[in-house]
Amino acid sequence: MIIKTDKTTFENYLKDASNYYGDCEKLILVENKDEIIDIFKQANIENTKITIQGSRTGLTGSAISDNGILISTELLNHCNIDINNKTVWVGPGLKYFELNDILKEQKLFFPPNPTETTSSIGGNIATNASGSRTFKYGATRDWVMELKIILASGEDLHIKRGEYIVKNNRIKFSDYNIHFDDVFMPEIKHAAGYYLKNGMDLIDLFIGSEGTLGFIYDAKLRLLDIANELIGLIVFFRDKTELFDFLEETRDLSIKNFELDGEISARLIEYFDENSLKILRNHYPQLPDSIHSAIWIEQEVESNIDNYLEKWFELIEKNCSLANHTWTALTDNEHIEFAKFRHKLPEEVYENLANKNIQKIGTDTAVESKYFKDYYDFLYKELDSLKLDYIVFGHIGNSHLHANVFYQNENELRKAKEFYKKLIKYTVGLQGTVSAEHGIGKIKKEYLELMYGSKLNEMKKIKKSFDKNIILGYGNLFDI
Image (cartoon, rainbow, N blue to C red; front, top):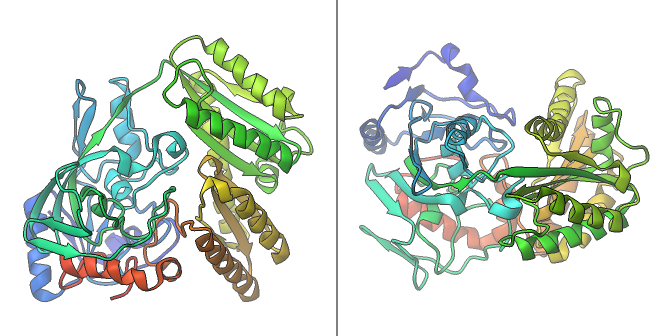
């Protein structure tokens, strides 16, 4: 155990990627579960608040403490692979890129892929992180098989998927017997509040709970074989009609063919709007002129890659007047360049924020695909009415977009906030989610309340049952 009390030695632990700043009495780097248990038991006696922290790549302040003790998971970074069963036990401090570098040597990979590769696996589990490949593979929740957790009381808990199933709206295990009323859970990409529904697996309650229910100190994850080959495509569109014709056919074919060989089946469908492409043109002058938008596609292939390419280009030529401008990636280096193209956009955004005294508000809403056209039209109508600079990009395969609105003064901030709240209300009206992947943390609590209203009390009931003294993740998700 390493304890630091001089804040000048750990200032970088008091800020996350959203620039949310916090404070704490001391920072503790734990090395084993016994240390965690001792800290938790003492914190209950002294009523000391505890915040659990991974790599600080989050955008909501959930891993940043406002007071009390800050516990870093970074020294809990073990990794034990079972090649035959395609599983791995990992510590919460292991970084996402570190895990996949290790797995790559065994020709395996962990399918969820959050954009920030330096994120920690514990943080990914705590926020149910997802990313571009969520379209095919789902979020982190779908790949977690077992968790070892220290509850707020100091109790050591080992949960295996399938071992505890919630029946009759009752969470029942060990000394816990908690009844909850029905809470609407969107059947879409969703990371807002506790996963809470009848028939759920108990393990899913802790995944996405943002450090408020326990300390995950070990996790067993399911893995997949790396495909022999990978096709990458960036497709460009003249107008919205082309975009939606291609999107809808691609999405429908992919979902239909997920388990079939020899057919079109994208693992990611990523969107760039016109304003995003204008920013990227500074670094990619070869972008075609007069483009409305673009979509990045990836498909895994075992053999007969030419057959897949032929089918993709038939689809592209059918729907896109700019088909002959399509970019293709087949080699490792070409796929790396496509990934750089995607990641260059947020890099440019943050560079502009730093250099031009600009700030931004970013959205994280998603809806069911049947409502996506209405959502898309509403989003752009409201953005255009602001008369502020903006870009929109993100996971269009999951009907999940990130709108970034830029502001330079208080009046523009007020307008941006009004837009965000309006979008939240519209999304909730379509039974969508206020956060598809970034979570709630401390920054977006008011939006969680807009989504759940009085039903938020059911989540508070769960929190109080597991953490009677309200010491863990204080300030995250909701106020009690």
